[in-house]
Amino acid sequence: MSVRTRIAPSPTGDPHVGTAYIALFNQCFARAQGGQFILRIEDTDQQRSTPESEKAILDSLRWLGLDWQEGPDVGGPHGPYRQSERGDIYRAYSDELVERGHAFHCYRTAQELEQLREALRESGRIALKPSDLALPLEEVEKRRADGMPYVVRLQVPESGTCVVEDLLRGPIEIEWAQVDAQILLKSDGMPTYHLANVVDDHLMEITHVLRGEEWINSAPKHKLLYEYLGWEMPVLCHLPLLRNPDKTKLSKRKNPTSILYYQRAGFMPEALLNYLARMGWSMPDEREKFALGDMLEHFDIQRVSLGGPVFDVEKLSWLNGLWIRELGDELLADRLTDWLFNRKNLLRVLPFARERMETFGDFAPLVSFLASGKLGLTEESFIVNKLALDEQKRLLQFALWRLEALRAWDRDSIFQTIKGLAASMGIKLKDFNAPLFVAISGTTASFSVMDAMVLLGPDLSRARLRHAIDTLGGAGKKVLKRWEKEYAVLV
Image 1 (tube, helix red, strand yellow):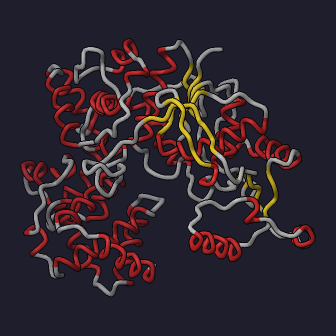
Image 2 (cartoon, helix red, strand yellow):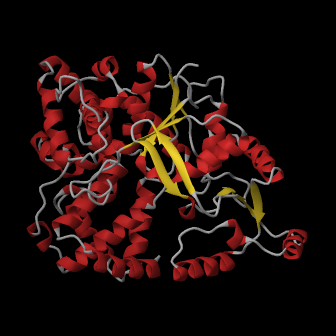
């Protein structure tokens, strides 16, 4: 059978560099074996999934130079490739599992589940087991007759050890005591990742699953599902997680994580892909700079390092510089034009710049912040504002949280969000906007901060707010916890 790998991103936010990292290794492994690489969309979270996020994922992966043989945008013989369009398939297998006694309807209420979890915590146990969730048969029948909502849960062993084979790590032993009675089908009829993942991988004939090591603890549930359904399990390969310089899991609080941020900040796609490849793999000759074609030619999964790769933006910038310096002048001019200095972008900016221009020479200084990645901010940049620095920092954090939850990135949505937050915090809009101006444009003398954020886009705007918060000293865990409580009251 031909090797088939896949990537299954969830369209619930900005396209993550971690998604590109996993996609890259799946593509290279499949191509090295003469196989196929498939993309499907995991959009079972209907409340958070959006078409805009799906498009951003596809566009950003294409921008990096990745491509797939089957997917929602290119079709294929194993479609549909969106999980939201495959609901009947999952329900059929869920029913089969229940009929065979490998899964069960769970009528426990949210209050009962919380009480059970509290009892578990007190006893020192981790996972809810079928025996914990069991109700007397007459109570089950009563709740069913009353039409109470239920979920479908997996039958899991109460004790013993599960052995999972990993392509790089060998046998991994996980105690069944750590594995809970996983929900397979939610009360709204939508599957969880675990059921959809197994069913789709089988029906799409996936032979090898390359995914992040955070999924190791879920492997026993997946192995159990394959056994219950009588299917052969794909070969598993858990890749090392990308980490911040402090060795914590890569997060947007400590590093820009959106692919779109690096695109908007002026990084070359070849350099970013090159850097992601170096995160977990090395060329036989150990050279730092190489193209995707070089990686495909020399790819060997056994050269993957299991150490925690550190995603260092300074190292990425250095590598990006190597790529830039190898471009000829003509190519560099073309790249700069395609990136930002084109007529389309110029026409977007001119309506805001014109009102502040007296000579053409005023244009570049006025809009230079739009062509910058990270601004050179200091505490002094914020001192001119009316509010105390600590209050400005708190304000910026609250604004960041609100803007991270914003689904539509347009002037009216941003303005209403900021205006509402300022009112709920009891701060005049003019005073509220002042630190935003500095964070976004580096000065209070720019044109409308709302318009500036639209021009910059959500990823770069949010990254600048995080940088401003860090510039003002950041916030420790205790302060963040207090702010989260205050923020929850406001919104």
